[in-house]
Length: 134
Image 1 (spheres, rainbow, N blue to C red):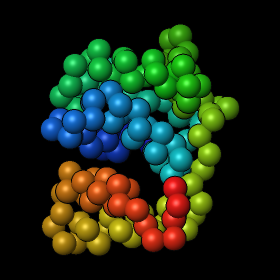
Image 2 (cartoon, one colour):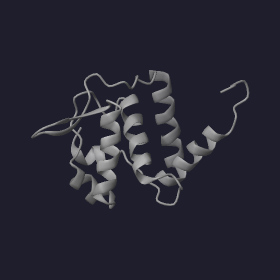
Image 3 (cartoon, rainbow, N blue to C red):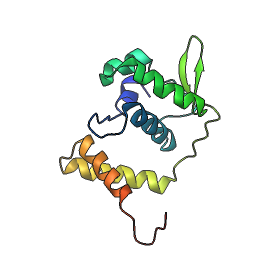
């Protein structure tokens, strides 16, 4: 996946109350679980991501460091950050991935932007679903 496409995976919300680095960590994990980022794939550099997302490079570095500690990303000298070959993240079942893509497509057809879609997902996660005891 080209770097520009990788950058498009991230939708950060500066007014959500969730720290930006945490949003980035969560979104990278989700992209790996959904197969949008593959094992061994190189991520854009800290500078490239910071410029594209218009955030402080230290925020990107903090997110990358957290993911490296969790063994989700690995740093290779002269190459940069890669999705770890032995990433602990498990893949999302195909039915879940397809349902999410369908939901996003429908939401976009109703002129919802990425921020509104993320808010809907966050709200959905906070609501206790009948029959789900977690």
